[in-house]
Amino acid sequence: MSTAPQSDTPPSPYKTLSVLIVDDDPFVCAMAGRVFETLGVAQVVQAHSGKEALDKVATAPRPLDVIVCDLDMPGMDGVETLRHLPHVAKGAGIIIASAADMQILRTVEELARAHGLTMLGALPKPVTPHAIAALLDKLQAKGPKRGPFTQIQADRQRLEQALADNEIEPWFQPKVSLADGSFKGVEALVRWRHPQLGVLTPGAFLDSLESSGLSDHFAEHMLRHSLAQAGLWTAAGMPIGVAVNLSVSSLYRLDLPELVMALVAEHGLTAQQVTLEVTESGLMTDITTPFEVISRLAMKGIRLSIDDFGTGYSTIQQLVRLPFTEFKVDMSFVRGAQENERVRIVLDSTVEMARKLSLSVVAEGIETKENWHMLAAMRCDLAQGFFIGKPMPGLEIPTWASNWAPRAAELTAGS
Image (cartoon, rainbow, N blue to C red):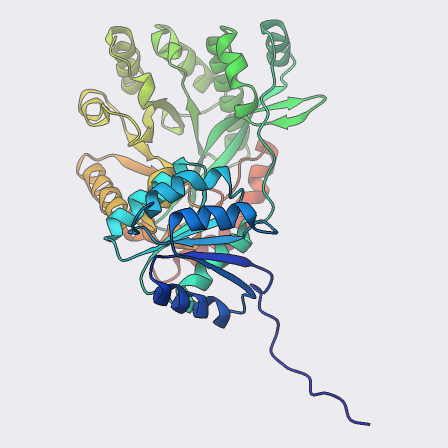
């Protein structure tokens, strides 16, 4: 009895996707359609105007997975089409395909994200199977969407109780050298170990904390517990640095230098092990007391860092006026530089400026090996992000460090 021949070709990972191609040129639509068919996509629909695209999205029998949209179209152009898409295309991955200048494509990408669309990327025409597959893989990697983030409401009395019971605690995210991968320190990040809701990240409760008038109490709590943990690591033979965020109001505490140095002495630390991070928004125009506090901390050897560098308007001025020893490049620059040449040029120039000012640069938001190698090539100093390690309780840091060592050796081999 004969049997039908079996194919050795594995099924396409894109077979179940539904795709809409939007372009006013029927020939371009047909060519792009063939690219998707080559990749094994079974359902490809075309629209030759923005209005037709919106109609087809709204009447599709099932939600579309991917929408490929041109920009320069008569009538409703692609930019206007993208503005209307969030109302009818929930969750579709968007690909911009256009002959426009790449900087225009990047700008429209950012606009689409601002509209709440799931951007997969922007491509020059004509699209190729390799480029499309890379973007479809990003869609696959996103996986199921998280539910909406919920903030909890807590009054002052409940927050005071949480602080008194040490439910509010620092978790620590590692920072490592991009030159040799060595473990240099950690940043203390707040978590609330809620007895009913589990571990909460700051977005769930910081609004309640700030409106309660407890910012100073909270900042001192984090400072005390973070330096206590650093003392335990130092006593165990791991004298790493620890960075703690300062609140805006902390900069008005004239006794802050004495408090910090008392904690340094109490826990067997050196001043150089402690970094205090100030956000750009914390560097306000009423500067008399903050400048005095920052200057005295610097004289005592405490390291000072500008957090989220590049997101404010007065950063360069503050670098010149204040005795900072490092700044942290905002993660939006790190992520954007991988794909956007202009962002990469700005980031590279920023690192070079820091070197000339004898400042260390910490790159936040390192999420991939490509991010790592890009920043290492720029001779950035320190790296921090999920690729290296997620925030974790202090007791987990030694285990992370032993697991990181072989990864670091692999990443920096031959550098």
